[in-house]
Length: 297
Image (cartoon, rainbow, N blue to C red; front, side, top):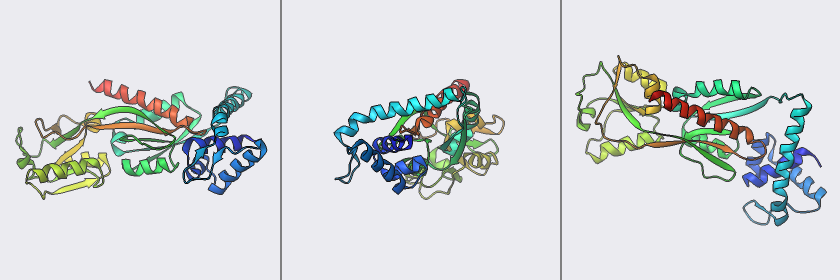
């Protein structure tokens, strides 16, 4: 019996998907199937029920899963002690949005370097829907995104609830108590077309008979703020970015503007045999997020 066979069993059992388990273990789908099959032959029992379309544990598989997870934990601890407390370098693949990058991702990387020095972090920046898809396919260990992820083997840790703000350059001539009709006269700058924010803005102006408007979009919060600071339009952006980047001499929040949705951000991670690294970084991200919010108050 080999540890890699146990890893394959735990990953398949937790994620309920052979392809995703293979991605998590960085091997091919046939390879992960072979490891499971060889373990079942050695034990003389079926661990996974392959009769239906979905991956389901057999009664014996359910009975052995907890013991298998404990075995993996014990093996990891044994390797750590044998190496004198030094842990083998481990990769963690993190996906997040430009909002979080612009707000506190640098602080998270500092904390990883300090508290989890055995990790080497890889960062991907994209929209929440795309990152959620990568997480579900096992191509990310952790996704810091808007909305939770309802998928087998994925856990969601609530980070924050962020309001959406209307911001404008002080160069732009706009009444302090601007109406929606006043704002419709200026270009609007916001997140990517497939974002929830873009859809909410379009619905707001349509419902008030002010459509079409000039609305531009980007998947970069930094670019969005830069364009707004240059006086080229009205920005609609998460307060997570505004508080961190706002320059009181060049930007102002439009008070009294129509309310836009409040969005929840989660750290979503896998909890299979190789997913504990995702859990550790998710918990670290929660702490960094809360500290960032406390500093802004």
